[in-house]
Length: 231
Image 1 (cartoon, rainbow, N blue to C red):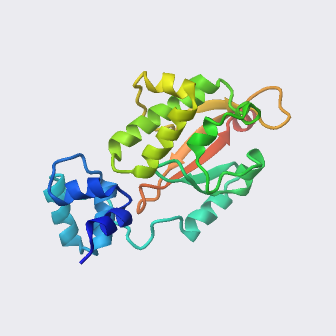
Image 2: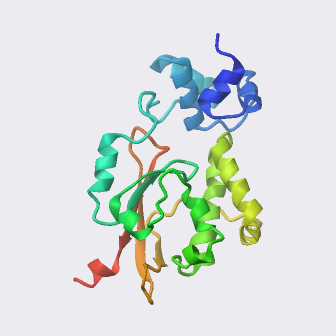
Image 3: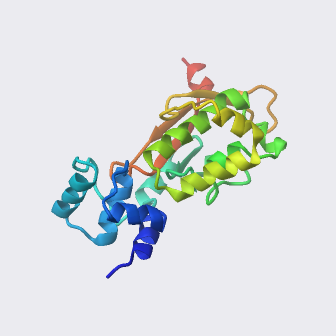
C-alpha cells in the first residue's frame, strides 16, 4: 500500500494537502493535481472519471498523460525550428527547454532555471533588457502568478517561486499588494533591449500548450517590426 507521504511526493504536494484530499475535505482541486493522482494510482479511464466526480463534481476535460510528463522530442524539434526565440516552461515558470535563438538573446541561458525569477533578478545589467520593466514585465508576471496559484493551490514549486520573489524584491511586494490578476501573456506586445541596442525591440508573446500536456507552455518571442516593416 502506498503511504500518504509517498503519494504526496509523487503528486508534488505537501503531505498535509494530500491528507486533506484523501479524507475527502472539500477544496479547489485542480485538474492537473487530480490527473497526477490518477497516474500515481494507475487508475483506468472510468476510475479517473469517478475520482473527478467525487472530488470536484465534474469529469476530466483533458487526457491524464501519465506516460509523458516532460517535453517530448517532437516539441523540442518544434521549438528548434522556430526562427525566433522560443522556450518551454511548466506551471511554475521553470524553463525546461530553450532553442538556439533564445540562447542568443539570453547568453547566460535559462534551461533548468526560472523565467519569473529572471524577470526579478537584482542584477541591473541583466534587467536592462526589459523596457518599461515594472509596467510591462514585472507587474503582469506577478498578476499571472496570482492566477496560477488560485488555479494550482497545491503546486509547492509555484508557491516557493512566488515566496522567493516576494522575499527578495521590495518592488514585487508592492506590486503583489495590488492583488491584480491576469490570465496569460499571449498576444501581449512588449519591448526589450538586445545586446548593443540603443532602441528597444518590440516583441509579441505567442503562447501555446500541447493538447496532452496543459501544464507545458510553449512561448515564442516574435519581433514584430521585422514583419510589419516588410509589408
